[in-house]
Structure formats: structure tokens, C-alpha cells
Length: 167
Image (cartoon, rainbow, N blue to C red):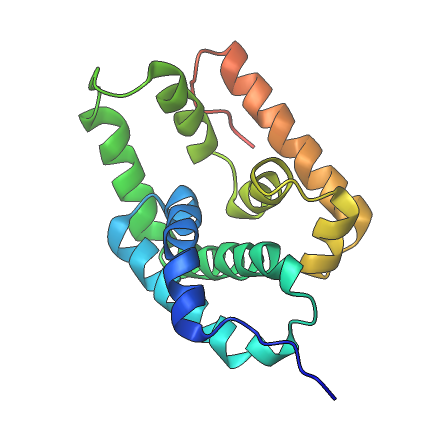
């Protein structure tokens, strides 16, 4: 029986490090915690590398692990992160970044990580709602409602000019 060779750990690490880090940072907005999440993601992934059946799906698989890991870390560090987010929002108002990107990111800061996760998987990774449900082991209706709520919250924030929207 001929076994299809899987990429080795070094190739995976080098090929996906930046993507995993950016995904974690997108959720955590903290450099050190994003590094921790990246490290934890690769540990989890390497422990389960033999479970991936189709190499073509490794990209989405890694992103799913990264988002879940970042959310776990977010939940563990919620109080500290909330304080840092507030300081960042008041402290940084630089013109060196694209205004539209900054505006969008500030809107995303107020979205719960679980909703951010489905937005990342849907709009950045291009997964269907059905694929997201399968990856996250949640119901399709739950995925749809998280996407709907996240979009609703983004729309409300946009209409209010970026002011924080209460639950």
C-alpha cells in the first residue's frame, strides 16, 4: 500500500506560522497572547496531524484550531484584554494606517470571539456555513445565527459611527 506523504512538521510550521499568528492576533489583539495561541495551535495540530485525511483541507483545519485556541486564551484572559482594548482605543489614533481598516477592526473589537470565529472562517477562509458547522462541531442553525448576530452588531456600530453597542 502506497502512503501519500504528508508535509513534515517543519514545512507546516514554516508554511502556516504567519497565517496562524494573524488569525490569533485578529481575535486577541495582543501580541504576547497571539504568540501563545500560535504556539499552542501548532502543538495541538502536531499531536493530531495523523487525523487529517485530506491534505487539501489542512488550511481550514489549522485555521479552526487557531481560532478555537485564541478563543480559549481570550476567555482565560478576558479581564486583562478588556483593559488593554480600552487603552488601545483611546491611545492610538495614528494616520499611518488605512482608516477604513482601522474603523472595521474597532467595530470587530466589540464582537464576541465566537462570532468573530465564524466570520473569519466564512469570509477569510471562504468556508460555507455547513463546513463551518462541521469544523466547529455545532449545528448549522447556530452558525447562521452567530453570523447574523455579528453582522447585525457590525451594522449597528457602523450606523452609530463606531460607538460601542450594548448587548
